[in-house]
Each structure stands twice: as structure tokens, then as C-alpha cells.
Length: 154
Image 1 (spheres, helix red, strand yellow):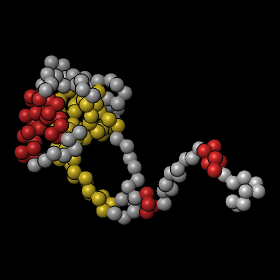
Image 2: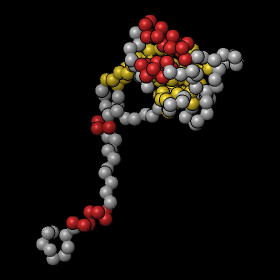
Image 3: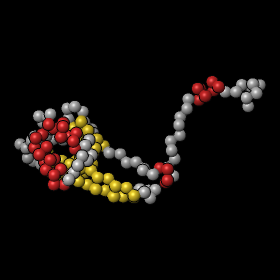
Image 4: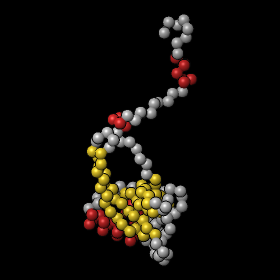
């Protein structure tokens, strides 16, 4: 999800809820403790230099059970961050601490925001020796045009 998308959703919302990948909800007394810009420069296993730039939202919960973050307040935080950090329309990743600190992609299902597990992948499969997945064929479909004994096709 991009910054423009979350602002559009928040403008039409009366409350904010975040669901974890297991379906449980982040407690509704959470805070957004940071909105940041994260730059990552790296070299993949094939030797190619790469970079990523993302907006980062950090969710945190405390013993402040009376606190509720309202959509307009989060929009104000995002807009201030856009101005001060020159965010642009970056993709958003979310940090949230369960048993460890997790980083998630952000989605929305029409009712609530969804924290989506991130996946790793090799970015240089063609250069580092990872075999490409071979196409799968239904062998029965291949025999339809097969040569028959005595046909002279082989």
C-alpha cells in the first residue's frame, strides 16, 4: 500500500483497526510511534547493486487503555511526515512487536488494515545457480501425438 492509498482510506474511515496475519487484532489502544523514511542499499547475491526506499510506520501498544488513534490524527501525522521527510508516495511497511519485532506489508480488506507477512526471494536467480522451476506437463496429453510403431515418424 502506498501513502496516497492509506490517506484515501483514512479520509473515509471513522476508526482504525490493524489485523495481524493470524487474524488477531492489534489492540485498539495502539499508538503510531513513528512514521519514517527507510533507505536500504544492498548488493544481491549476483553482485547487482540495488536500493529500496519505503515509508515505515511503527505500531506500539502501552498500558494506556483509554488512548484511541483516530483516522484524522493519523492523517495529520502522515502529512507532517510527508512535508518534513519528503516522503513522496512511497510503499508502506509496518513494524509491530509481538514476541519479536515483525515487519509487514500493509493491505486493506474494506474494513480494516491487514499486516501481511513479508517474503524473501532471491533477486539474482539467473546468476547465482538457483534452478528455475521446470514447467509441469500432463504426460497423458503428450502421448496424443506420439509416434506409433511402424508409422515412420521415429
